[in-house]
Amino acid sequence: MSVQLKWGLRFLLAALFVLGLAPVFLERDTVFQLGEETGLIERGSVWVWLAAAAWTLGRTLRARRWLPLAFVLVMVLMGVREAGLPPELVPSGKALLSWRHYVDASIDPLRRLITGGLVLAFLVSLIASVVATLRYLWRAQGWRRPDGQFLVLAFALLVVAQFAERWAGHQSTSDTDMVTLWALMLEEGLELLGGVFTLAASTLRAWWLFRPTK
Image 1: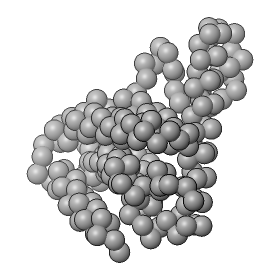
Image 2: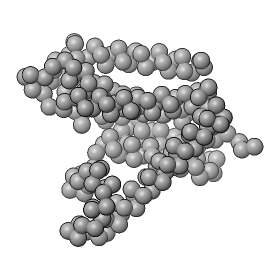
Image 3: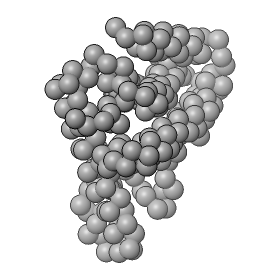
């Protein structure tokens, strides 16, 4: 186990400990304020993803490579996803992935063209990023190295956060139970931590994206 991973796991355990204690020691309304869509944790996630994108973009411009741009776009869109889009412009993410959105005559053609281009760019970048990362993890045994370990950890945290979202409630009610509060803290907290470990991977000098090609 690398030194970086050891410290990363210690940080993760400490963060999970804090997230678990929050619903116990804080008032219910305070927990909801922290975990709401415009709460402190959500805003933190936005800035972390954008910081990772900015850092990676800076390294990309210096290295003059194309593949890292795919990672940059994914990071930016993750930040945008956390920030949320105006419903009058984008009704929902699921709607953008449906062909009905692009054949709906009631929607402005220019808007459909722009959103379609953005979705296509995101999907291409996501596929390129995932394929490149999997090749690195498998062929170069990147799972043994800090950059690969951080990215795997970030992905795992984001997946678990999606499961926690099923039990999380975003409205404070008198009958809200402790499980719902824990799920809310986990959902928002793990999404933030996923961004943190992605940022950590992007700042490593040995990140495989920027290693000299042989």
